Image 1: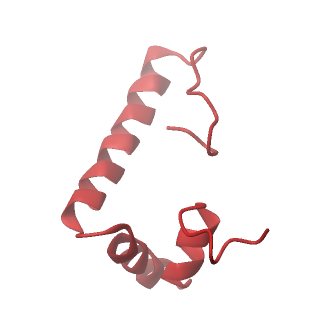
Image 2: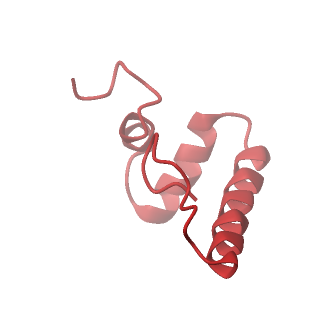
Length: 69
């Protein structure tokens, strides 16, 4: 799993670590596919974590109108 945007995957990780990273990526993809949009997924995550969905989208850099410049 990439820990930051534009950061390459950890190619030096052991096979077990890479498998765990891939499993987390697949779990995230499954969550995304259950929702109709990024905003819907962000709202679902926000409900669990107690933050605003719009803030999650802005932090991910997906909504330039909300991102700090």
